[in-house]
Image (cartoon, rainbow, N blue to C red; front, side, top):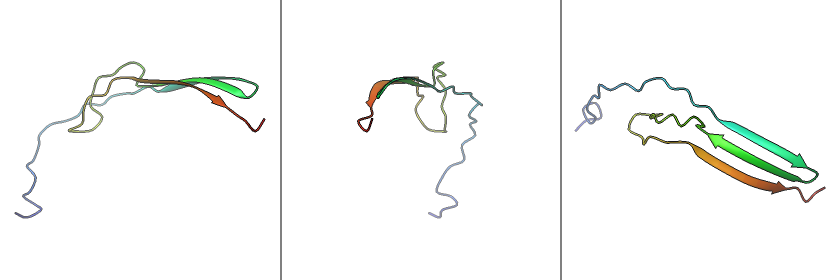
Length: 68
């Protein structure tokens, strides 16, 4: 089987989408508290052909700067 015939042609199109990501951080002296959101409006579309649909993802945390 040659490389030219190895893959079947797929006649599917991925529609255009807009993903919105955001990060908010608040710093008090050497401590920073943050919240990071990816795909915050939960656009449930595929970003690439053949991949899973990814919902929103949230990350919250605290950063401590010990050099101060």
